[in-house]
Each structure stands twice: as structure tokens, then as C-alpha cells.
Amino acid sequence: MVVKANLMEKVLKTGHAEWGAEAFDFKIGPWGLGIGLMMRHTGYGSPKETGAGIWATVEKAQEIAEETVKKLLSPNCEVVWSEISASAVD
Image 1 (cartoon, rainbow, N blue to C red):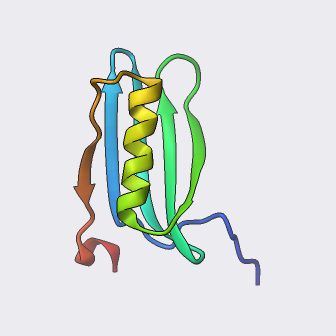
Image 2 (cartoon, one colour):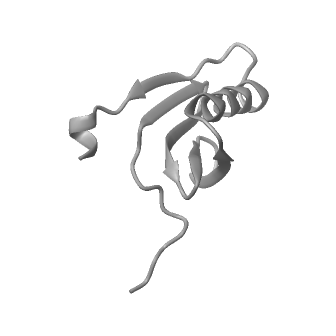
């Protein structure tokens, strides 16, 4: 049996932010012993999937995503978050 340690177990929240021709999409969910934050940058050049880390809580992962958007896109840019319903996850 092959276990892929880099896969998120399930997605709890998704987020999207865009500014001009640049955008970030986020996924937050259980990953190992913490909460994983995955981000995908699209816009100029090719899309890039990047792991942003493992955090203690969903709220901390959201905070990191929001800081990333403000630093890399614009201080005025906001992340729009969507909860994934329990029925969609099961």
C-alpha cells in the first residue's frame, strides 16, 4: 500500500481572491496532525500549486491566506471564503 503524505484528507473551506489579472485559490482541511493550507496562484505565467503549511487551527490557516493575498496582490484585496458542507465531504 502506498500512502501519499502530501494529500489533504478532506477540504473544509475554499477561498478565492483576485486583483487585476492575478488570483489565488485556497483549500483548508485536515493534513497529518494539523490543518493544511494549499494555495494555487494563477494569472501571469503558468498556474502554480503551492503548499502554504500546516497550522494548528482553521482560523490560523485563514489568517495566513489573507496575509499572503495582502502582501502579494494588494493590501485592499480580500479572500472570499466558502464552507464545504458536511454532506459534500462525506
